[in-house]
Length: 142
Image (cartoon, rainbow, N blue to C red; front, side, top):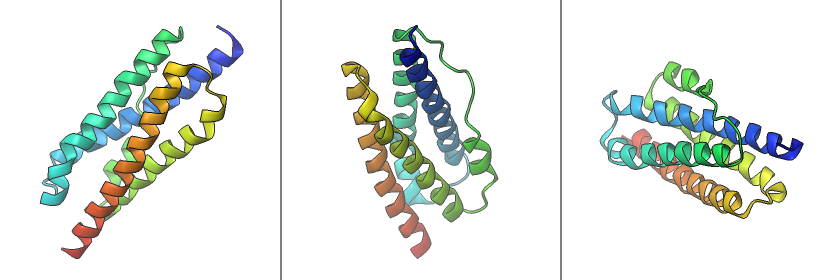
């Protein structure tokens, strides 16, 4: 692999570890008696995270890399948070962090298939940020 491909695979593995942490956190939330407004959205949010884990794995493999088996440290942070307000705030921050990293990287992505995937992933994260912020406002309002 070229240096550029190695760098791209490392970036995608970092995203994979983050998405895996997000998916596990969201699955955990489902077992914690979430507020109804959150419970209604958790399956779709979890599905998005799992879909991006699968897509990242596919692209890493397609580019000749080996998908990381690790889960990002974000999971431990979210699981340690107390209360839905704190958990949702961390979820928004995590989604925002991933979206920002993708946006920063897009200038250098030359592979059209990967670029299309990352743009979709970025846009979905922005939509999910807005949704979780709305949920957090509803949870705070009671």
